[in-house]
Length: 281
Image 1 (tube, rainbow, N blue to C red):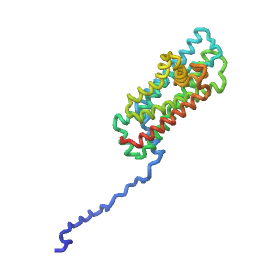
Image 2: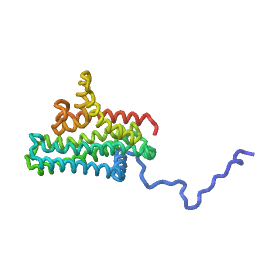
Image 3: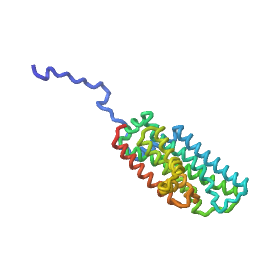
Image 4: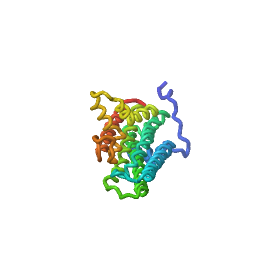
């Protein structure tokens, strides 16, 4: 008996049914634009964005305006200190909200397992993290800058003084917005490295507060240099430096705090890209 006799007969296609299916949807490779659209949909559709940025706006506005009202109730004399510097207190509190959202932007996907779906749809891990960084930093920058500008304008009206110089205004609005976006990128990077939302948020809050706390308890003369370094390069002092009212007489001033934060964010994001590429999800 020939081998053809044992072969299974191939079924004939049904009348009117094509032998293969061709999707009408055009097939193309995914791009960074597709990843950006996906991350924009995510960040504007989850409740954490509304709550964290909403609370940040309320803190910046309430604390900033309250500070101006208290100064007015006293004597209204700023003693040569820029009026917009009163926005520092609200921004410092609002930074906790930026840190939280930065971590949740990627940490929440690890906690729910959604990161597997994300990386299945977009296998390029670098593209995913780049899209998250771009979308999150732009949202943070715009919200912070607009809120800081409105608060600064209201403070100027409340105190009834002259308008601060243009560079001071630029640092207190655009500069602060860029600084907060950089701080958010550091938080995003720590979230990608740690992969645990609560742990990453705790680490970032320690980064903001711990240097000042440690410096307060360094009484030994041999630690004076370390104490001065912790004071000068702490997050609160760098933010105050943008307003021209640093906690210490030395340390980063003017645009220098922003350069320090840009360098820190670049190092943190580099470590995050490396960790994301080398580890499994």
